[in-house]
Length: 334
Image (cartoon, rainbow, N blue to C red; front, top):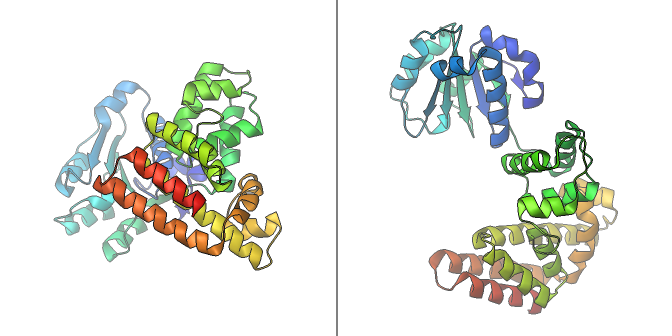
């Protein structure tokens, strides 16, 4: 069957009544939830219909017998029943033949949705896919996030500056579930037809212009030790996960190294660097300057320092504050 994207799935929603088996696969959980919401709105007229006829199973908790039993039963006071299997890739399958028999001859009144981060490549998985509609739920590229966030506000006729959209992306990250949650908070607070100001973002998300992970990376790359220590320790006080901060720093160092290496090879324009790094323009402009602050040897050393800090955090060898102080000193001074 054709593989759809979450964006064009709604155009094919009527097909789930003809082919009542749907596969959602990919790492972006937001799109899984978005497609499920579209299906629910399509097949259920009321909340009570959904409560009576929507059954959710988990691959880590249920087996195929539980799922098939729900699939074969008839809907109550509705035209269709919705059976959702989350984490299908973790399901322990004891009787694959029975499951495939159902896939070959599904109950017309049951919509079966199999949700998985990764879809297998075995004959079993191919047979299911052959008889189903598939939706690929992959994360957006960094250069697509800006438009996605912008459209969220545009739906409510809310005016939001480009710098604020970048600020949201830089601080909340690329996880669409998290981004969507914070955007909804802002929309509900500001109201349709109004303007988002930076103080709204700081008030509702807990981020400020100075104390945020993006600014932390920025002052570190600028080799500003006092600012790095102040912001880094404040982030820890605010509940930022220290291992998460290490991952963010590692990613930033990798990107700086890529930029530095490609500049040395003659790729010096932002368009050239955007192609080879995959980074959007608004990140690259600052990072091109930052990348010049470290030598090749310092980049190599940085990975060792970050790896040791991560190990110390996970083993409880030192307190998070002390680990962060030592790490920042070594990254900047060595």
